[in-house]
Length: 197
Image 1 (cartoon, rainbow, N blue to C red):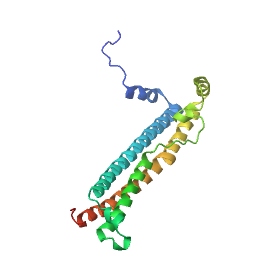
Image 2: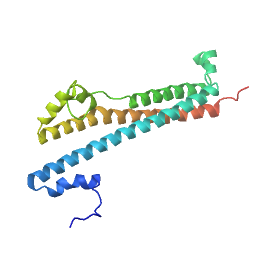
Image 3: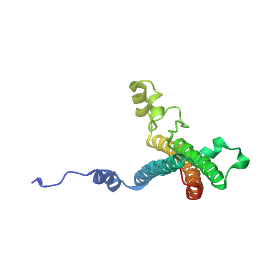
Image 4: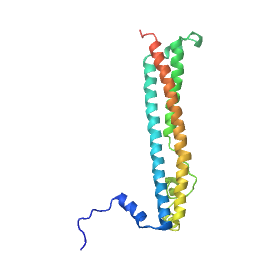
């Protein structure tokens, strides 16, 4: 008698079924594929973290730039020669430059990376679009072995790591450094600036 109260398969249970039913070398290949997809997902999440950090740093830098502008810290720069600038003006100038650099680095971090080591593939959107039509994509996909598809995924993981995550996190790192240094200089300039009349 069939069971009628059985719950439908969840995505997790469906993903686990091939591994549970497989034996020997098939089990090893399935485990490798699952590991590659987990790695791929982790890299995608890291990409989002880098974008979020850079966007936050750029937003804070923009607020500090506006604070310098509203305090008119730029006035001595336009009215006096650099030899006559007070110390607070030098702090504001250096801080402003670093804050502008932080904003520029934030924009560069979130800028999409449009590079792939594969002209045609099955994961990266541009590699898929390079087929031109769905029919060549279908024909190419149907002719692939499991190992070849795993190689496509591995290529995409390598591209995510070297062409997306690494440059994004490196730029986000310098963006945050520029924010910290520029923010400290800007705050010191605001504290030391004479009050507006």
